[in-house]
Image 1 (cartoon, helix red, strand yellow):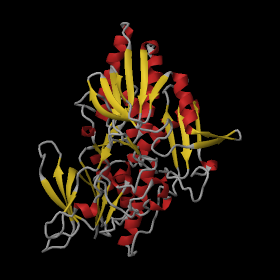
Image 2 (image 1 turned 90 degrees about the vertical axis):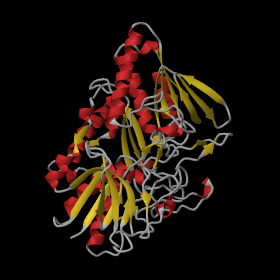
Image 3 (image 1 turned 30 degrees about the vertical axis):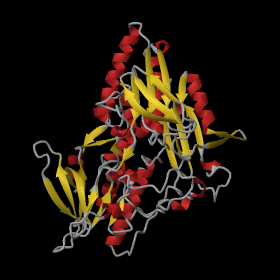
Image 4 (image 1 turned 60 degrees about the vertical axis):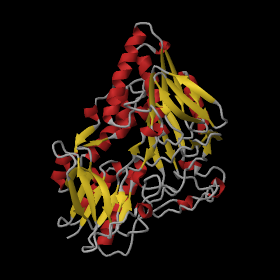
Length: 484
């Protein structure tokens, strides 16, 4: 009998655990460790943040789902990996700390034959003074953050209805942020909702981003072939913002957030202040702070994790100039080079480098969008890692399934306003996610498989995906037939 432990119950971890349970014999144990008792379909937090959904619409309790399907669940956070066990017992284990009410801080050692680190990111609001909940800006990173943001929006709308003018600032709260796409969704949904509530004429909306230009999204931008012409994504985004009256600050690192003011610096050394009455600014990510310990009790975290806290996997981490970055640098098995039974999936793996060209300000602050690896890529990675582990437990020498972001395509439907008759969404496909200029010298991607459109049909697809993926995550009948 074997035991596979999955740390994290987000998109990647939940996907991995679900397929492990489906593929492994019932005599084998699948254990999920997550500090929260709920699963959150994060893409729909955008709609919670503008008041169109409640948190209950985007979360569900994990324990009943896992119990029904024979998956063990621990509501706890992982604190230390012991991949070599102890000197007197070589069985590897992970130390977890309970987060259950009434049991907070209680520790347990969980042994494993294989472990998947799918802990996701730490929301590093502390990287920018004054950023985030507890500071002076809002967030949609969690369902509770999004609910607080919706309440703040209601207050702003009431002020506008009384005749006050309100300034809205949306974007990235640090030069090293990722998930510009989520902030973009919030900006355009906010603009749409203010129109729907009849107060758009009293609102100024400004976008602030670490992207070199609009439409970069941490992926080095995109190009679309339409009507015989190749159009950069920048034109698409600039047109959309112009139509909706949204102004933009690009190439920016937010240095500090104070009440009503975000201070920033751009790569040319310019410093400015963006005033606001309402600010929704995303934080940068880091690893969650796991440590690793060898059999003698010595700290070996540097062998297992990168300095940013994300886990080292089968990527090429050699430092090179941007011009020498290659698609082949990216991992494909997500196995730790130090321990064959240790894998990372989703945001928890350390990318070898950014996708977009990195910059910095004259003062040395980064203006370098981190590579996105959420949603569809996370699910595909989680499934591939699960399949490799099942095969290795069956006798395979090493990982049997590969899925690199440099050979993987992705589809994204970004809401741009929710209404069954007048709503819109941006429907994007991109192949590959990481540009490969050796295969596609002109643009790094296959333009026949990279596209972008906006329209009402996209909104209906977004609604369908919301319900479809929550159905899949609840492991309802036929769940495994729904693509990642």
